[in-house]
Amino acid sequence: MHGPRYAAYSPADAYFSLIRSALGELVDGDHFFDIVADDVIYEVLYNVSGWPRVIRGRAELMAAFSGYVENVVLHAADNLIVHKTDEGRVVVVEYEVHGTILATEAKYDNRFCSIIKIENRKIAHWRDYMDSLAAWNALTA
Image 1: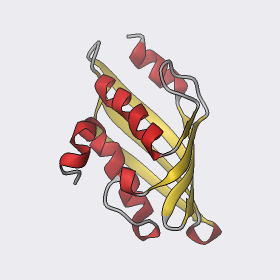
Image 2: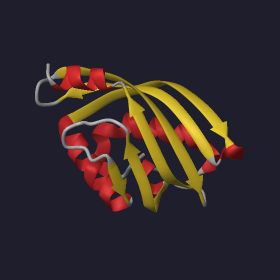
Image 3: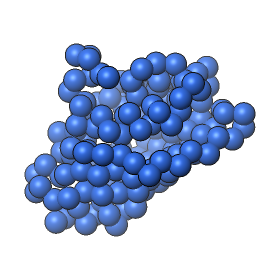
Image 4: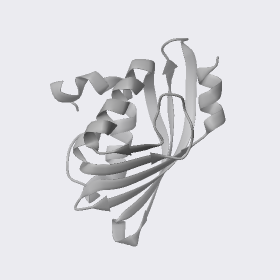
């Protein structure tokens, strides 16, 4: 799926694959980073140490995910629910991820809801909500 260009991000492949399949024919590109606009705005509406609240641009998003995959390995992503609105220009995805926090080997299970705005067949804006307590419990185990 990722080839050598995205090999360093393989610990998050389950997430990337789930999002890619959720958006289907609405976007162009094979990998998650290919379907993201160069000037994407990626917002997270929660506080997690080391993760910025707003990420601007694909390069900054890739840098943030570099840190993520150094700390978390996802084994699965599932329970996907997709809601398409505005003729497919806005997609709401609900899903869960399951993995391990590498530093502590703690189990990590979390639920997310992401609101994705698509422009020119790329993700232009992403707004993310998650179960902050689940993240806190895994990170402080």
